[in-house]
Image (spheres, one colour):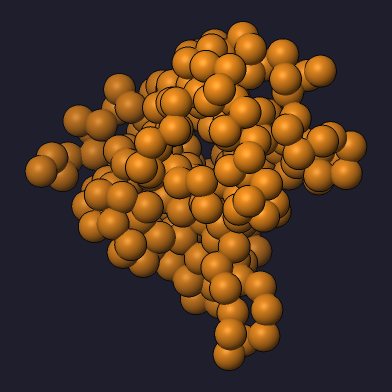
Length: 236
């Protein structure tokens, strides 16, 4: 296992946010960073836990989730799956408050963790770089507003197609916005939870895409076969 953060620079630099950082801030993040290797299902942090730093996904994926229902019968609601080179956890860096959601390794995963206290101390000494961190949060807010609009304005088929496209494009966080990941490590049930649809509806929509040879569905994976056709559905 490679525990030298500098050896993971090619992955980090494939992300739009990190690639555009001033060198001083980028170097500081790598210098403060600690490489962590996680097993599938391992906890990074839980809702209401104290701030523990800023994270970047180096390999694998991280599941960000919440809960619905009464506390004694709460059920996990999957919000997003983050793969390389996504950064997350910045909200608690700004407000120094408890975590708003749970974060688990979705599969065997490697992350870079920039510890909270060290990062706060460095930013206090270099306050001009708070804006750079703010740009990361602004990207997330844009995606959140788009998602809210889609919930009310689009059909289920359009929402599913757009979410698959968004995941394939790394939620727009990559430096090359045209690059796509065709094989997505997600189950039909997880996709249903992410979209707020029933499993039956999601299965029906995926069956239609499979029949049209737009996607291939297998155990724990969805492969995009025809990106253009999927995009046409999402924007029809």
